[in-house]
Image (cartoon, rainbow, N blue to C red; front, side, top):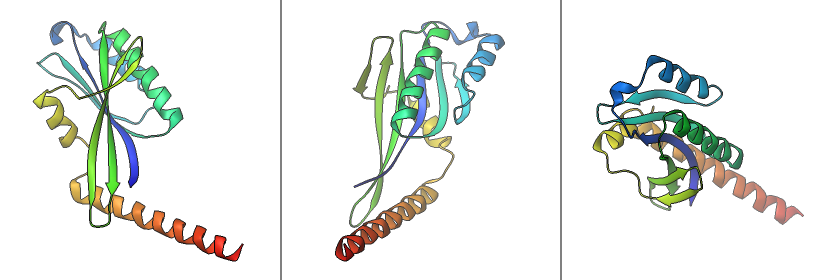
Length: 160
């Protein structure tokens, strides 16, 4: 059972050298990021841009995140970008984390694997903002709240 979902990162592979990115471009990236839960913007020597986020997943935020990534793609003159969504899944005996990747272009959104960039994967894990133990505690709290809500609904059905 899925307990929680959040948008964790945006990834863009630059079609040019990272050295061309100016301070004005970085300022414009931060300006675009106003109103979003953006933690960090990294530009690597491998010509990769990684934007770390902590955005709760819902339809409104999903649409805004796609619009944001498309604006970033346009600003950086790239053809596409990727969005990483983290899911917390609870089962009877465990809680686990899964990552989903989406490729965003000017034409559409596609479910796809994430780029196989070791820097990207390491950065997402390193800058996730929370360690694994805190993630598990958070997921367990959500699971207990979900169970309590289910029990309340069951009690209300029994009364009604």
